[in-house]
Length: 621
Ligand code: PTT
Ligand code: SF4
Image (tube, rainbow, N blue to C red; front, side, top):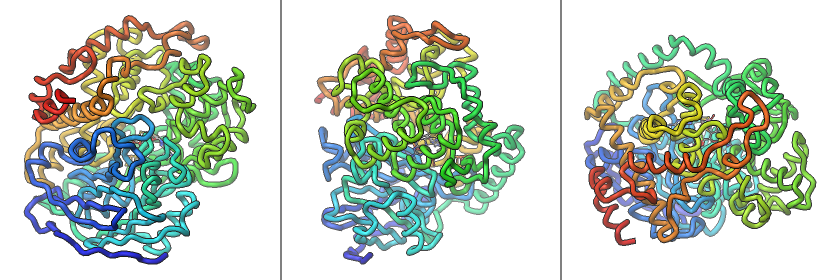
């Protein structure tokens, strides 16, 4: 690898008096290999906080409407929050965002990586990448220096191989995010990978990276992240770790992490099975939390975390594979595979190729059903590791049927026709995550109104729903979905993992304390909620602006299968969603949010949230 450019620093505002935030964005243009540091002020920081808030604002302000996601003009943003990188619980998270090639709307993901920590130590809150390199490139950021390195020899390698090579060059104290062959070949659901088992950017952020010929970003940072009260922040950070260690569910969490959800989902008829045809799977226990515990060889995790929920097992090919519930459900029960070591192979392959495991499992399930129904000539069966693995490779390399599936189920079903659009399991083009909703109306609403397409991260309400009026469509449900969307959105802006709060009951006051000690400013939880609502509406506005003319409430409806084909197995046999009741619930959701009947935020709502400029633009579009 050789350095082919080093460009001069334009301005570096590290010294500017701002605490908690570094106050700097690094703007990088891959076309002309120029870069510049841009500063932002406290007013901007307080209004959008960080992470997703910064990314959504930058995309709204800078991306010309209608830009093709694979155009060099699209922006790929890696954004940290004001808590990222400090010594406090689970602070190694980075948002990766862009206009999505899979959905055509706002897309982002949240990845645990040392790149998050070093980005902040290097003096930046975000890297904003635009343009397209003439040849495969690695972007190397080391404090004030930026290099563009020829990565021709890395192109074609998987994400594990890429990271290993780069670690040899830059040592273990560098943070690396990279893409595998999926991103290189513009698979629409390719993600960004780090640390052999951390992945983010479900709606094709890895493909955007590939479209820019950007194979990896290496970040080294040796500075100190500015804090208003560094010693007290550290002390309170360490107290937070101690508190986490003492939580009653800590030991069980360390043993099973998210994997215990497999058995829970099966017991509650929400475990996606055979392309979401059913919510129960006979082999659930063989791929669940206890099976994982028995097979576990180690725990891994994100930086600055003492909950390390990455459960590593040896897969059927004797390779390490780091398991999470979503991956196992989508690549296990959803494909009819009941052997954890086999599921683990597909899980590891997804990370190596840099394919989002949720979409991969969803797309494979769709392909098997299409094969069984004679819509494709290829013979692919349920419960067949060899066929699923071969098809995953075809998708990553865009060969044969894999080339069509690489477009995601929305496009594949439109091309295959028949009844396949009814069982193409997506919302707005993003494949649904691992909760079947035949018997979960609020969770269906959460998927349908998620700001990136059908993802559970913004409102995992299904656990609550099993305890509250399970089959109801009442106001309590719309209110709860909105509350969770706002609460979870805060974590996307703070730049920390939400699991301490969500899974161990770590009190939210810790975060307001940390924010105060980091920034010197007091934020009440209510204020953070308002910021989260602002960002949620901004993302919504981005979608509406992009789909201007064709946007209406049908964008917020889950797939037909859940309304028309009732569950045929399990305790909830016969359950399905009711379309008329769903539509009423959706209108109730809009009303509560201050959106009109098409789901567009009203001028009054946008003005209340300090988004008057957005209201003006939406009005004009
Ligand atoms: C996230 C989505 C999830 S959500 C999972 S498992 W999960 C899948 N993980 C994938 C993977 O692994 N490899 C792969 N090739 N594709 C994958 N796709 C799926 O991506 C992840 C954890 C998890 S595990 C969750 S819920 C929490 N998510 C958080 C979040 O969104 N925000 C936040 N502030 N904290 C969070 N903490 C938890 O982080 P996306 P990670 Mg992920 C291997 O990326 O796009 O957000 O989709 O980041 O470092 O792997 O940690 O049962
Ligand atoms: Fe990462 Fe899990 Fe720790 Fe969250 S709990 S920071 S996802 S290892």
